[in-house]
Image 1: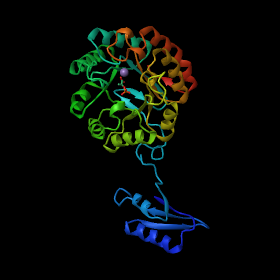
Image 2: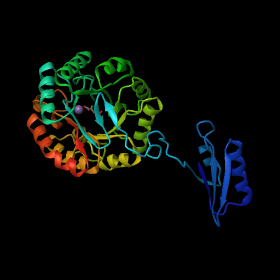
Image 3: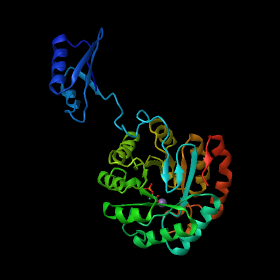
Image 4: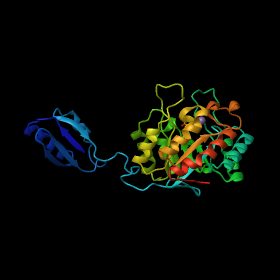
Length: 340
Ligand code: PEP
Ligand code: MN
């Protein structure tokens, strides 16, 4: 930590802070400037008192951390891109991976038809919610265990890997038994107990960014997973709440780029939740590729008008096929290889 003192602090008040830093168990190293003095406090904060409390001293201007708070997630600790192995499908590095499927698993026919269509178009991972986090308790809540069974069936038939959301600690074990990737939804991005339980399952985790989560907070949520022994984390930018209502959320490409810069973990963009408008999905996919992310997760439905959730943002088979046909030159220009 660095403690910045107010300009022209008299020597005895500087010594007071130095003594306080030492009392809290750190080694104080003062640097005396012509007007301003800063004190570097050397020591491990995990085993010592926090120095934030020094902010209460009148001569202290600011107490600042030197290191990133997300240590394991940070590129500082691991400069090379991490590659997450999803039952043989590689996410990250030079790979570009497409995950696609319905918002919700609705029935066998809907899921299998979608699985076949997204596979034929080039996706390698099938998405589909069996447990749905709905804003209203009167909306479709997902098929639960039956949905997981259908996802397993789709995997057996097509070979696609499965990503599906886990809503509660209670469900981690049986969702992990059916899924290749556990999705932590935006609404649970700071449900730390769920993050810990999901981490312990050993499954790769797709961590959505919270609805109003700052980038640092999102990376700290990923840190919870890594600190609990699971290095296989993928960060997913899915839009945030802003003043804008034309789009459902504001897809934050800046955050996707920042996550790539700050962290070695693969970054996935979800243009579907990201804007909530089916006709915009195609353009946002290209934008995400250009920003340099590692993959996309896209909602696809056989008949979006009849979908039980998120109908307005799901693309149909034809739109998905077209989008996938247009993507390879963009992926190549970004220096990636589309995983097939
Ligand atoms: C979803 O993927 O359907 C979903 C609910 O995502 P999010 O948590 O990002 O809203
Ligand atoms: Mn959805």
